[in-house]
Length: 312
Ligand code: GLN
Image (cartoon, rainbow, N blue to C red; front, side, top):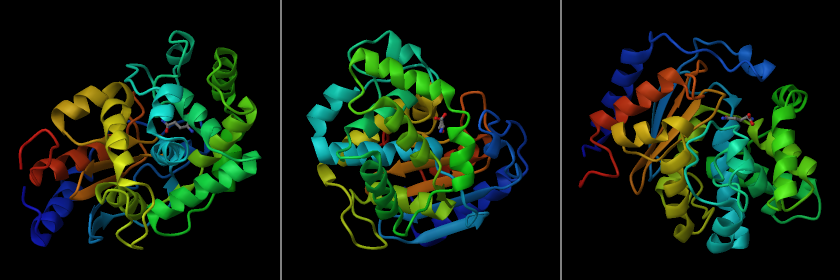
């Protein structure tokens, strides 16, 4: 592992230059807003567990957090109900299914299987304490902000685009309800889940969110403890098993870092105790993972010799 400033700076610059002109993939089109984002945008960032930032490209552009939000809501639900209850009520196994799979709810019965697919993520939201949907939403927005170290806001435009097209997720929410694994009103959980996906972050924010995980739950920019250190390994384990959906196994095999993608084009990878790598580029592969961001993040990890499976 070579983690001096010059090596990180060089790794970020080289990964950006090597993958800037990569082609392939398409913007998500099932959410109309996402189809309209400039597909040429591309940014790569590293933030160390002590808050040093290295960046190249469009790292200040705000994009939709989408499924990466699942990691932070998972963290908050665990914080509130405890690790064991969370595991029992939401599940913790890889699904081997696409992120929006109905099968992972319908066939498994007693738990939605993983908090990082849509089914488990809505179940997770429903577990977050609150008298109303607004209470749960405020808690989620605050936790996203605490991980990022700045105030994160909802994009009304993204949210409206998603809320008016999220029929599939609404169906999953009702299936969870009928199976007994939806712990609040299902349409409220789906609404709050859709909002948590519709917040705006930059690649820099993503890197800070990841650096907070790498720093065992303390945001290196603010010094605030966001979640207890004891829950961080469960977040990392879940990211390894399900973070890139049907590509999670290949990612673990080839890159060896817990990761999480979103259909907004963001990807986050974390080397525990050391740093986070964030990438952003809208065109996605068929699994729903950003093509360029995957390549760039993988290259940064490789050139710095990072993998949780290698002895340092
Ligand atoms: N909001 C999106 C959805 O529920 C998030 C999916 C994703 O990023 N993989 O379909």
